[in-house]
Image (cartoon, rainbow, N blue to C red; front, side):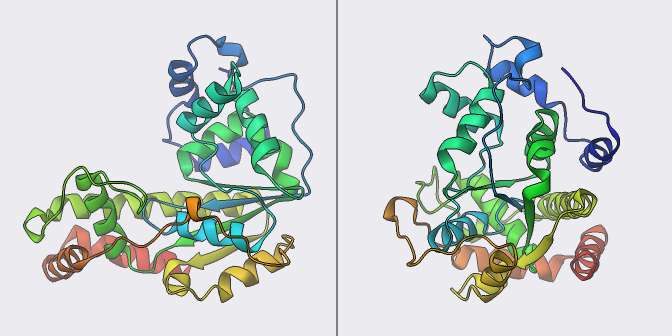
Length: 287
């Protein structure tokens, strides 16, 4: 697999260290694609006026945020289009043989008004770096760093989603969760994962040298999108004359009394290394 090692790219990839080799996953998903063609294509990248990247960790409200930005701004559909499984799905639908072609197709068909939006975590960004997506669009790229101030609530939401198999309101649960399913160690591990992920994404965004705005889930979860609009307006994303609605892409919050019970119990029991993680996360939010 070709590895990009020029200065700025190398620094950004270093920030994403430990994210694995994207080529291994893609090679399994695209068995008929030659290794040398996984990240390379003679087809030019579609022209863009701007590109918005939402950098996030699981259960931070990224889908809700994306849908609301889509509704208000001419940016097309924002999704995890850099993720290998989505590249595979896009390739199958369009009859394409490589992830490099699938990503170009996604930019061309999912963008709108000269803008393209995506949301990604560290692993997806590593693949985007290797394939040249970031290099090509970086001069036009703007980033939103999406945080939840309440890392315990986020960790609980992630642990519950893992248990039930329901990550979005549009999905059916494989099983129901109860207060008795509470697992301190699982929630603790989730807090560590969130802290590590957001540290990586914050460092990556700073190394990009591009405009970055931090947005907090708690500021928009009740429908007040003042901070989101301020960021999008500052990025000069074109505003729609009227909000666009699409019931097929609507999402809703799925937290319930089980979430509250798990949060209360974890906070009551939190000590030692777990308490240190929470303190480190509070420091990260202030950085």
